[in-house]
Amino acid sequence: MGLFTKFAQSADLVKGMADRLGIDLTARMIRQPFTEPMAMRAMTLRCADCASHAECTTLQDANAHLDSAPAYCLNGRKFKAMQAG
View 1: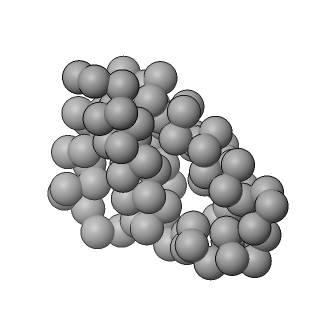
View 2: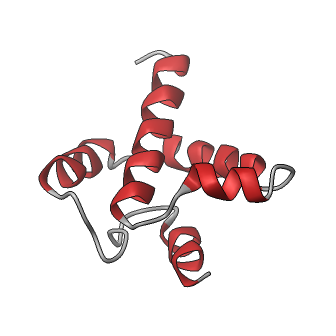
View 3: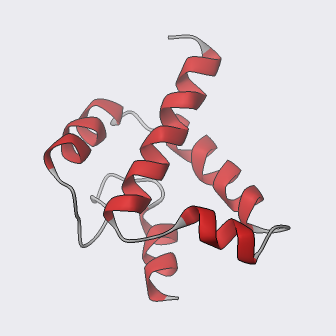
């Protein structure tokens, strides 16, 4: 897989996970335009390092809503913090 394809897939997985967790990333970026885009970039890079893309894709395909990110998610703590406030 090429580098740009991997980053695009990772961005899609981060956005998909956020959607399933009830986190509106676009609204967060609008409210905090100087910090949230950098946080999204960091989350995408963390996701790109993950070896569980296939599992995450399958999980997201099977679930429209999730209460929490899976244990293998490298962004799990960030998602949890976003859900809390």
